[in-house]
Image (cartoon, rainbow, N blue to C red; front, side):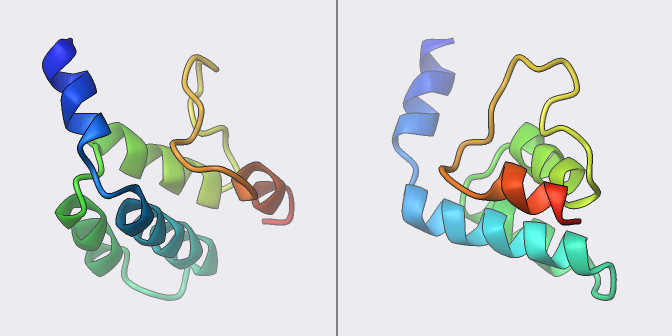
Length: 84
């Protein structure tokens, strides 16, 4: 578990945030291919759970269906989901 915590602490959160926000927007638009945004997110060290969670939000579902995990970014995703 400590290796995972260290991995998450060592990421460039600004870069990760931009990639996850872009993924959210592409998912919300439903008019673009998701693959480039997914690949970009993974290239910024996003986890599979973070990518899946952002896609869930984009499609109007909860980030974590069990309610145990919150989005790794501050602001607007839950509010944006309401307008999806």
